[in-house]
Image 1 (cartoon, rainbow, N blue to C red):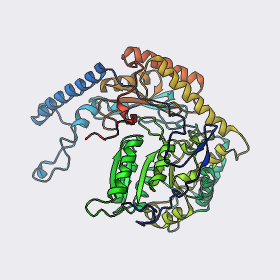
Image 2: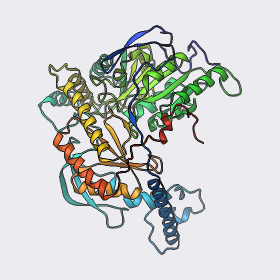
Image 3: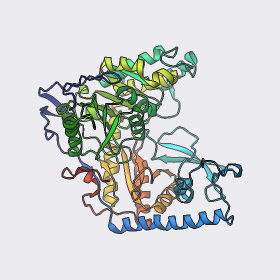
Image 4: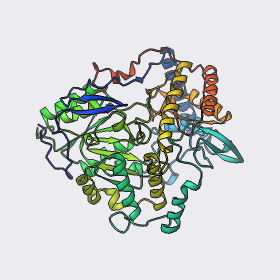
Length: 548
């Protein structure tokens, strides 16, 4: 059985608020509701999310397209092996033919034969700040995308619908950035040391205090890389004998951190509370395999906004389950901090929750704040523990001082500490732009995923050929988009992923929507029949078993 008191220690101690069983007032989007902490999660209004299923013909043609591509891939591999067609891929040297292969031929089959034909839609180099408009360096390929060459032409003023610049704070230099320039002149660019050695500056301490104040928690610690904030700190919190319950759509950084920890990992269906509760119940009843000892810790890993689905975590229900079963909660707010909530404080504020209900608050500065790095926030004893045991604190170079100052000025801007209300206005403008953009896409007949308040907007295209045509045609119209396919998404769920920004004007959004309307007709991509999705059976509370 699991320790009902949550007091067991494994690589340090997390302190849960599970013992708080009293009722408290919670505000959700301006509405005060009485939140009774008794495991009942029905006191919040239903989360409005869209996951419409694709027409059967679209699924059939998508799989047919991959099947035909696979057949031609094997044919071309045969021609390459016989020397009839030139092979541009990495191959083993002749003198190493008896060695264990360095390049796994079968694993690279997809990259070599399918991705390579459309890879001109990724890794596009830009040569300006990633604001609402940016400049793209034109490039062409003479060998079907194996190599590229630059033409020397710059595609000016492309509407940026792909960057995570939610509040428009990643912009060209202006007078408001003078403090960043001053810090650069005083401190230089690099720190050349880790936090545990000579790499803790007064700017880092100032930033950490400001982050804690912004999140309304006791303490915070900042790191130089967002991805490493997850992957290098989760192993410091849990280890062998601990159990991690991870959402099936969690980011790769969370997945890597969980694997590196050595803890047992079990996956629950995305945002499905029955699936999560079943795992929690079984963990409490049966304990560890073979020995049946109580788990040292049970840690639930979730995200605030899921970057490929645009969905928002069901935080009130997860907190209720976490308290009921005496587990710990780790939430990654990389995409939600700054972008949702009445004042941009993320999903905790969005649902009107108490920040103390979340044991480990994680987020990044790479999106809404226009900078880089990440943070861990929560109780002071948690943060003090990480200052000693975090792999990032011990081995990674500290955050660059000008970057720290950019984050400081961004947080002050959002909080209104700069003496203006422009930060709050941008948060409100982002919400307005998001609702407008999503609503118009639905009216046009596209299938879009996610929560109505999420600025990450996936538009389903399904077929790989349509992914390529979609991105290429839009770039010709001076619109930059991100298209995503397998293996980042399920095989038959290729999509375009738009990121709405507060910096987008009504005119920009209308220009994009007009182009999308025409592209939807050209590619026959308006699949919506306004049917409830079968896929988020993810969200069907009567079905919570993971598929094998």
